[in-house]
Amino acid sequence: MSSVYNSQAFYYVLVIGFAAYTAYYLWKVFQFLAANYKARKKYLAQYGTENTKTVNQFWWWTAGYSLLIIYSIYSVVTIDSSIEQAEWFRMAFLFIALILLGQMLVAAVKRSALVGPEAFVVEDAVVPWKSVLNMDPKKRGLQRIVELQTTQGKYTLSREMGLVLHKEHEEWKKRRKEAKEKKKEKKK
Image (cartoon, rainbow, N blue to C red; front, side):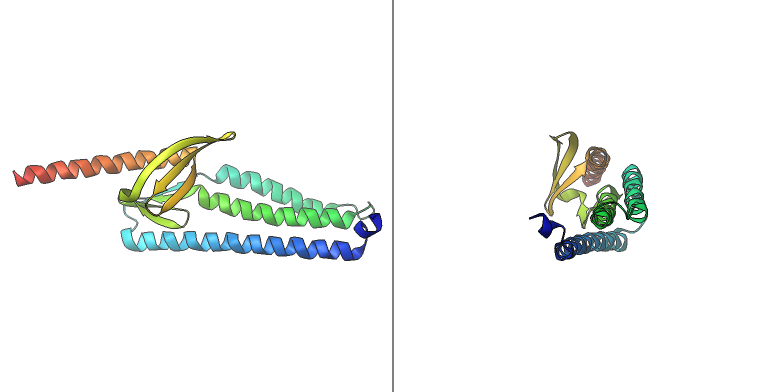
C-alpha cells in the first residue's frame, strides 16, 4: 500500500485535486469581492459620499494572515529537497498560502462596511436602515458575533462591527423620530 502513496501518479492526482479545489475556492472569493465592489459602487451612486463613513476592522486579521502567507511561501522556497517527501510539503504549503490569501480577502470584506445616514453596505448588499429587522448578539464557540437580520437576508458580523452598526441604527431611529415630531408640529 505504501507504494501507492509514494508513487508519482498519486502525487499528481492529489496536486490536480488540490489545485482544482483551490481554484474553485479563489473563484468564489473573487466573486464575493466583486459583489462587494458592486454593492459599494451602487451605494455611492445612490447615496453619494456625503456623511458616509468607512468602517474598517480588518487590519489585525490582514496582518495575521499576511504573516502566515509569508511563512508558507518562505517554506515552499526554502524546504530542503533532500528530505523525504519534500514535494508533498511544497505542495501543501503552496495551497495553504493560496487558501490563506482567500481567507484574508474574505476577512477584509466581512470586517468592513460603508455606513451612511440612510443605508449601509455589508458584504454584498446595500441595506437601508428601515429594512433592519434585528441585531441579535450571540456567542458562537469562543467568538462573540452579531446576527443581523434584514428584509434582504441574514448576515453574521463580528461583535465590533455589530456594535458600530447598532449605534448607527439607533442614531437613524432618533433622526427618524425627530423628523416625525417636526412634521407633526408643522401640521399643527
